[in-house]
Length: 338
Image 1 (cartoon, helix red, strand yellow):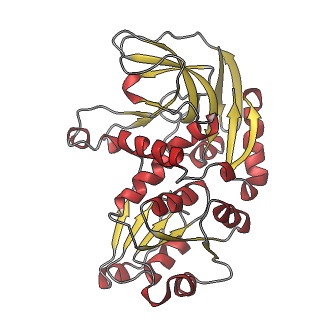
Image 2: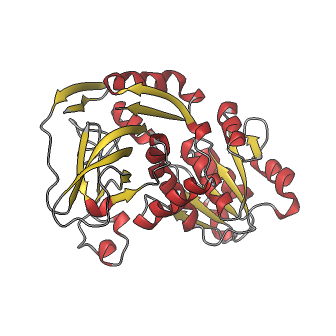
Image 3: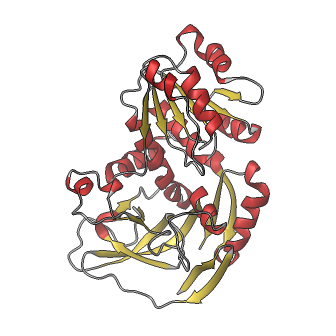
């Protein structure tokens, strides 16, 4: 079978790898679609701090179940599916208390463990997430980033009727805003990129603001009035947007840190203390987040079509990265087709 191996930053080799059979408790999927995410781009640039080369990338994907190993029940051969990419120990304190998504020894397929950038992918059947037959392969590959958004939104607590600011309108910020809307929140999404703000509008997020033209506090007054917002999701991984949230959110508010910060931000902790703000981190997801993500996409609560930017055949994997480097500001989700 074909396998794409990133042997060094920016260098992908295609190899012929042996086809693995599904062992006891495992499932084998024929991969049909792979989504390229920001973390994959970091690996391509050699800037991911926890990835070594060579590595088989790919963790956002959709495929078809081709075979099941001994003892596997509840899955259908031929059905569409995706799978969670975490490899956890099951023995550390976080795992034992049920927080396996932040396992002390966490590995993620595509980064610290081999990913799905190959024709066939074998994984633990317990990590398989069955998908509705009517799902497109693109929707299936988007379940993983939607699960990121679902988990992040869950970290903020009850959102129905609350005013929410989402800073960053890239794929994750867009999906966070949509997931918050699914929970009954009123989202305002902020970015400096008009293309991404336009995509947010296409996804039904009516309240948008360009931070280069309108400070967050002014945008909040325009959209929410005197009440402002008391929940924010920082999805840009930028010092300026984090501090804008801290300075503009209502007293007693909650800020969920979704974005990955490449450098340590300088934060006005005096305001955090004085205004009794809560800063909450979020990392990945659990199986229930995947299930909720599937439901949100299936119901139409999460719009996916506007995020579909461009497709590349498997053999042109490297071209996908070049496209993102050149057109990243005018694209959302790039897919690899197998």
